[in-house]
Length: 292
Image (cartoon, rainbow, N blue to C red; front, side, top):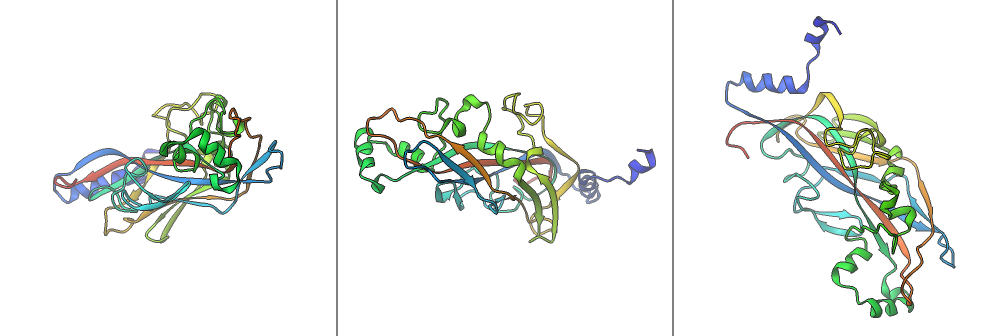
């Protein structure tokens, strides 16, 4: 690229810096990452009578609307239709708006699985499972784990099928299978502007993955870069209302075999599973002193 061409290439970061400087007031510039979590559902279908094989199906058409809620809002998350979002689910204190009275140049994305949740047949569904409840006497925490309300980590496949939840596979199976079938788009101001980003398998996880299955080098510096930047403006300004939507375009099917129960009472049947997906965006955030 020639020097003259470089003069014509303007990034959102440079535009914002020039605008703040033009106003001739002091301003603060920080690097800031914002995150949001949504869940994608797999239904158990065609589980044979003997319990030897079943199929987990993620149905096309599911939409994950990131940044569409704020801390304290009730959202539908995995097995909790009225989950109250905390700082662990989103950075936002107002849905679709940047934190503080600030402008953000969105310059990178990471995406990955936060965890796996599973729902089993309720105890009242069959005479067998009251025996299970009586034998195990599950606590409130365990009950949440068996009803899709708390994440399950089961590396030795004691209750989760090894094809789905075993960390011995060195990957989040459900996420890696659906990512190539999820498309992502940014929307501003009620779809006044839309940017289509392609499929989600190109978005790296930003660290913590196995080298065998990471999308590139698994480090915190490994991010999907947007050099030109997207403007997420302060409240009340054009481009101040933003959310990011992932859409599952194709059905995804996973055959599995339920693990053998170690309990004499047997174990409830798996009826649904969810992968929770965390999206992070970040770049340069500008604000005037005195705003939070």
